[in-house]
Length: 333
Ligand code: CP3
Image (tube, rainbow, N blue to C red; front, side):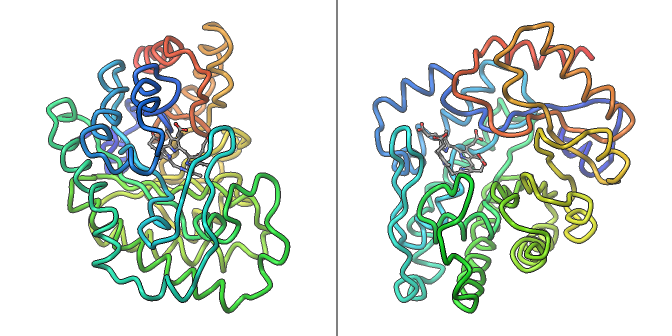
């Protein structure tokens, strides 16, 4: 059985596999080299040779237990015809949302626009380097995608004024997103993804009273869909106000926690396997501090099914040597 499946399916507590959010990315010089030659990020994601190579780059260097496909949650709006661009030091920029245009898109149009993502998954998952490792496919949660599609950029601390004004429209868009996310998930699984992670990076923007409509219900629908495909699903509802309630309602196979979560508290509250938590900034400190902080998570979760990961994506300024150190600390624990 593949390492993450041992935790997610068998609830094994005898070891801790490790992978790192954004492990294929800017902290690696070999990624930056390819990126320099490919200024259009979406086109890079759709280049099957380069994207497969980028996906495997961290696995060529480190003893990680899983590959995560090099792609982006914003391939969904791209596939729906909403233009997405990435500007240096700004992040994503999306063209204005147009309901009329989006309702014209069908499954065939969508898959045609982004089918190369599935080719990357086919290529990567059949590579011998992943023989005893997992291949993680992913999507953005409906709420987080809605935020990007309406807000047209990262919301940082708050949403555009009047975001919730037209509730009918918002709920219609959520249904469209959900429909195409299911297609995107199904194609990823058919191409070789054996785990799906759902990133809800902006779950923390919502007050508790809005969580059922925007987070719990649409995410539960997706989680049930992934389970129907017989693939484990990990949810990362970053900074959500109530992780316990999220898990009780949505019931993913594992929950990934952000670095503001108190691991001891969550251990009391949550029975399902847990992933992540370590603050990515710890990788910018020194070896001793890293060892101490990583061991804290390993100690607390020693009798709980636990996948080692960070509490958010690895920072671009991280020294790859510290990643090497972290993996050794986890493997030798
Ligand atoms: O290694 C991996 O994790 C796989 C690839 C991956 C990327 N994005 C590549 C990427 C994954 C899983 C994502 C998820 C993603 N994308 C999320 C959810 C996770 C999170 O960080 O909260 C979100 C919100 C996005 C949207 C997105 N894409 C943003 C906000 C940005 C700009 C980030 C920044 O720091 O500038 C991206 C660009 C992006 N996606 C990069 C990478 C490697 C950087 C591209 C570059 O400029 O070289």
